[in-house]
Amino acid sequence: MAKHRLTAVSKSTIARAVLGAGVLASAFGVPAAAHADTSTAVAAATAAKHPATALAAHKAGERDETKITATADQVLAVARAQVGVSENASGGGTKFQQWYANSQRAAETVARDGGSRNAYLNAAWCSMFVSWVGEQTGARPQVGWDAWTVAHAKWFAANKRFGHEAKPGAVVFFSWKGGDSLSDIQHVGFVVKDNHDGTISTIEGNTGNGKVEERVRPKSQVVGYGYPEYAG
Image (cartoon, rainbow, N blue to C red; front, top):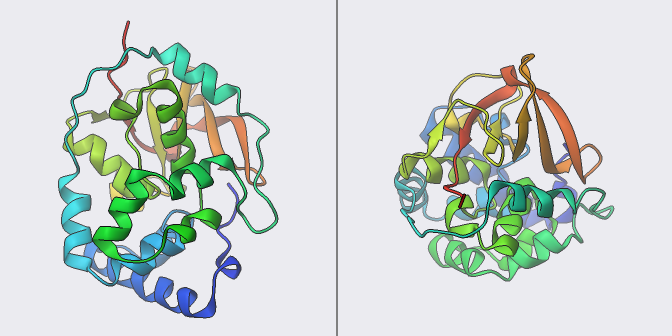
């Protein structure tokens, strides 16, 4: 997974990001370093302004039981078609970041926590990729949307659609140190299949050198799976 580039934002934003990451980490009882790849500059910095509101939102999630017509195969086909898309030298420039920065969800986050839409343009984008695929296929009400993997996972949990079985089209959440704490999640992608050898095949954004890639991951790095209710 590509390293998040704090050098792409201003010094004042960097300072607020460090502070914000500490606030969230303390509140969740985990080290700030656990969010190095997923507490983007905007998530960390803006949550510091309204920590109680941010934490309540992450804990409660947002219920959305809207039915969709997309199948798991259709969602995976759109995700696979993005393989090779890459970020620029500043960690930005992808259509996933640009879409998210202009989305209603970004507006809601900024309205809730403060900050700026522009901060998403060079932020870690694995969860934005998953969200974009959901939007393009009409599956977003079931796939969810967020720029922060922890909040994305907690949305699935709040909707009673989070578990530990690898299924095609499921949204998979990773922690490189393993474990089952949602607050330790660092990365996200789509499950293609369970290889039944202790690994899963996936499609992920912001991986390798900042690209969309197909990967094989050990299940030991999986925190859990979010289950969109696909059609068919």
